[in-house]
Structures are given as structure tokens and as C-alpha cells.
Amino acid sequence: MHMDFEHVTFDLPHGTFHALQGGDPDAQPTLVLHGFPDHPPTAKLFLAELGRRGRHVVAPWLRGYAPSPTAGPFDMASLTGDVLALIDHWSPGRAVELIGHDWGGAITYDVCVTAPERIKRAVTLAFPHPLTFLSQPRLTQLRRSWYMGLFQLPGSGWIVSARNLALIDHLWRQWSPDLSLDPAVQAELNETLQASMPAPLRYYRGLLRPGMLGTMRRLSQPITTPLLQLHGSDDGCIFPQQVDDRHRFAGPHSLEVVPDVGHFLHIEAPEAIAERIAAWAE
Image 1: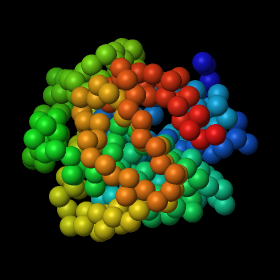
Image 2 (image 1 turned 90 degrees about the horizontal axis):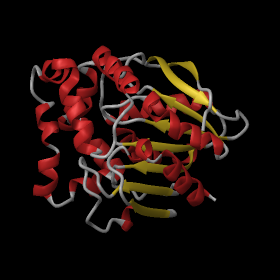
Image 3 (image 1 turned 90 degrees about the vertical axis):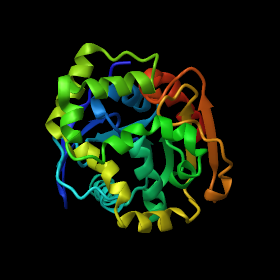
């Protein structure tokens, strides 16, 4: 469906963050966090479907993605702080629905354990609980996570940017084999990523920093927020989880593996994913 989204800004402690906003301002406030290597406009059809199902949607460009601030640090506590500051600015006194894809999903888990009172319910797309991800069978997942090692190297920003982001285009094809972005949408995304490099890669470098120990301690607390996990059966980036992690959730929780979609499941099947979220939230 068509829905108009306005480009809005939020003046937060780390700088001016940009976002897409749409839907009924009196409806359920819903914050949608993108992942790597992505930005809000690629998900406009999904955002519109959320709006059609009674949501007032805001989808920010996260720290590290132009036109939002591209300066670090990129530790999880800082990324979570951005989201909580945005919630306080945008929806003071009213708990929000939080939806996160990929890195946005990782941030979503951390927000839920850091400030559960601010989140009415949460949805993660294509990203298991971080401690579950670390306990996945190693060899098979390591083959898919080769890019994380690459991003640790000096000069990796140049490698990623080379030949008009050919490596990024390869990752999209590998992670969602049946998805073809509209050329104009892909060009807009690549323009954002070129303007942002190497900041998006620094999320991965932050994984090896001492601050991650504090994040792991926080995430060891059971999540009390009602949480839905959706994962594509054909995800070429992260395997659907193969371990039982129900002990990580103290509140209502559901895990659904969605057939015939890959890593960018909400872009491949925007109506179906929005409908699953709406049905679960009822």
C-alpha cells in the first residue's frame, strides 16, 4: 500500500538523528531499527504495512549511517543509549513497540534488558538472542560470518567501498538469494553507505572491545518484555537458531521460522511479516 513518510530529525545527546515517520500519530508508537548494510528507505513497504495495522512508525538512520551522526563510539551501550534517548524524545511517558532487524535486533535485546519499562513489546528480525548466537554450532555459522573478520582489518572500509560497493551487493544476494532490490532503491542505499563508510563496519570492531563484557552481563538477565523472533528459513547470513534458549525469556515469547524468505525477510515479504507481527500483538 502507499503511505507518505516524512523525513524528520531528533536532536539527541549524540547529535541530530534523521528518521522516516508515518502513520496515525495517535496510534501505537512503533520504532523500527534497521541493520547492516541497510537504511530505512529500503523498508518503506514494510513500514507502510505496519502503519496500515494501527501503528505510528518512526524508523531512524542509526548511529554510523548518514545523515545521522557517523562518529563513534559504537559499543552496544552507546547504541542502546541512542534508542532510549529517541524514545524519550519521541514518545515521553508512553511505552513503544520496538522492531529491530539484524544489528537493530541486537540493539533491541539490549534495550529490553536495559529499560524494559519503556518497551511495550518487541520483535526481532533475523537475529537470535546474542548469547544464543554465540552458542550456535560454530563451524557452519563461522563460514557465513567471514565478513566479520574482514571488517576488523585496517583498510576494510576501502575494500567494502571499492567498485561501487560490489561487496555489499554480494552480501545482499548471498543473504537473501531471492530478493532483487529496485535499482533506484539500491542506488539510494549505496549512496548512504558510501557517505557513511567506514562507520557501519565499526559496529563489528566494537565486538572485540572490553565494553562487550558489560553487554554480555546485561544480556544474561532473562528478558521480561513480550518478544517475537522472526527468522527466514533461507537466511544466508545467520542460521535459524538450533539451540533451545527459552530460559532467556521470562515474559511472553515466540519464535517463528518464516518459509521461503532470507535475511531481509521484511523487505522480501512486507505484508506477510507485518501481518505476523500484528497477529502476535493482538
